[in-house]
Amino acid sequence: QVQLVESGGGLVQPGGSLRLSCTASAFTLGYYAIGWFRQAPGKEREDVSCISSSDGSTYYADSVKGRFTISRDNAKNTAYLQMNSLKPEDTAVYYCAAQDECRDYPGKTYDYWGQGAQVTVSS
Image (tube, rainbow, N blue to C red; front, top):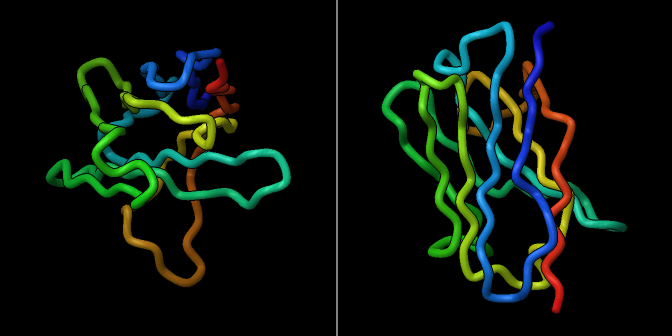
């Protein structure tokens, strides 16, 4: 079955860390750029980060720059989002998605989505 499976979410105190994983099943993750997105209750989906398939270039939203790190291990068919110095405003459901490139453009579509991982930052 072709799918992306996320893991690693949970409850963490402010200032803590979590690492999300995004593992591809039945397709080669290395052929795709991988983006991480998040959606908090009552808010629109937000782009968080992206890593390209070609040269590993990375992109971050200003809200997470310096705190989050995206990476990929194509041999393990997995991408990661390391989240440090977490804040309550980082609380959201986090999704990964496979796409042709990180650049946004009109009519862009995403090939595969994960099911989402809840991240809650609270004391």
